[in-house]
Length: 165
Image (cartoon, rainbow, N blue to C red; front, side, top):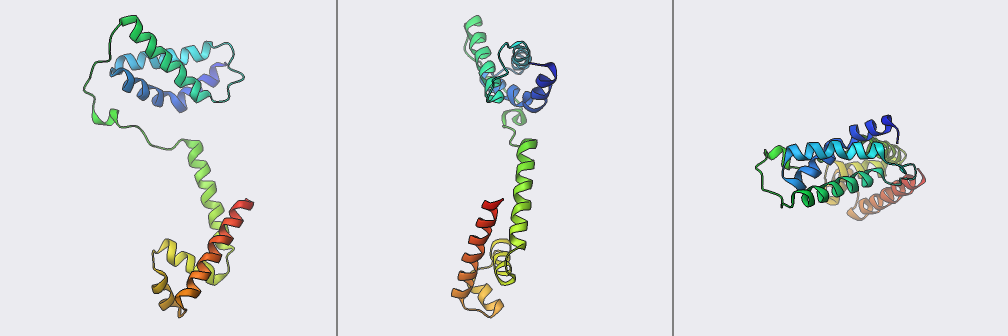
C-alpha cells in the first residue's frame, strides 16, 4: 500500500481507531502506540490491493494488536478513569456520509418542487410545519379526506421521483 493511501486512511479513521483501542485497553497511551502500529502494519501489508473494506481491515489489525498486547503482558485490562469526552464515541458523520446526505436532500427538494401546487402545499404544511390533516383542511377549505388523498399522492410521487434519481 502506498504511503499517501495510508495517510488518507489515517486522516479519516485514525481517531476512530484510537477511540476503539482506548475502549478495549483502557489505557490512552497504549492505545496511541497501537494506533500507530496499526497504520504502520497497513503501510507494510503485502496484499492490500484487493481490499473490499479497508476500514474493516484496519479494525482487524487493531483487534489483533490488542490480543497480542494482552498475551504479551498476560494481563487483563485495568479500569482507568478517562475524561467523559474521551469515552463518548464520536458520532460525527464522515465527509462521504455528509456529501451523500446533501445529495439526498437536493433530490428531495427537486422532487417536492415538481409536485403539483396543492400536493406540495399540503406536504409542506403536514411534514415541515407539523399541522394535522384537520387543521390543514380547515386552513385550505378542503375536507379532511381530500387532504389525506393529496398527501398520499404527494408521498407516492416523491417516492417515485426519488427512485428515478
